[in-house]
Amino acid sequence: MVLNNYRKQADVLLIPLSKPFRNVNPDTLTWIAFISAILAGISFFLSSESSIFLLIAFVFVLSNAFFDAMDGRIAKLRGIASERGDFLDHVLDRYADAFMLGGITFSAYCRDWIGILAMLGVIFASYMGTQAHAVGAGRDYGGILGRADRLVFLMVFPIIQFFSDIFGFSLNIYGFSTNFLELMMIWFALAGHITALQRAHRAWRWLSQRKFEEFSRKR
Image 1 (tube, rainbow, N blue to C red):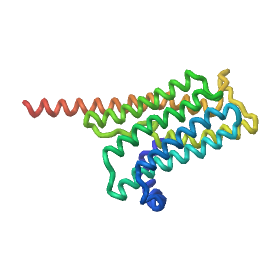
Image 2 (image 1 turned 90 degrees about the vertical axis):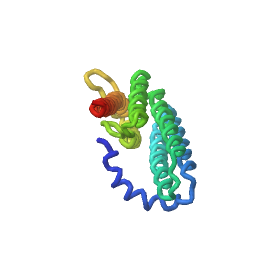
Image 3 (image 1 turned 180 degrees about the vertical axis):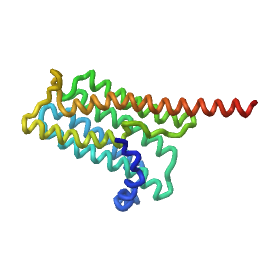
Image 4 (image 1 turned 30 degrees about the horizontal axis):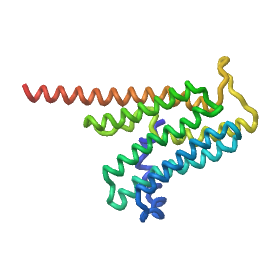
């Protein structure tokens, strides 16, 4: 499940949705997305007290996803896309990931060590994508867990967890007592690190190929 493969199809939907925001500074939308992520993280943390905060978290994650998609789209439509805006977007995206996953990690729904592994997996996956760009291989959005995928999980699983709590449903897998949010974090931990390795491998292969081509030219 890599939603990055459907970027072109998503653009068809985003173009009409972006019309009301065409006069808004893209950086403003980036900050709104970031603030939404902070509020989502707080809501996830407070869900330990009441499941209703899971629904509130869903709303803020949706807001984060929407405005995060809008900022780049608006910048391109207005012809003001810049490296500065791209840098701000990616920096705040990493902090947004930390806030949202951190809120779950330190809630009653997730064991700390699972949450930390999930956060590390997501951070390293993102780092490998931008590091590939830094060495000249181009920004890598590939792998089995992209940011769009994570946002979908972060919207769907809180809803599932909410209804699971309402109906008193519990999970017990081979004696391992867990819940849907924690299962999501386990997936983030596994898929995040696998994605990081996939991106690292592609960058390494590209660098090796470039080194071989340079050596061939010198001969």
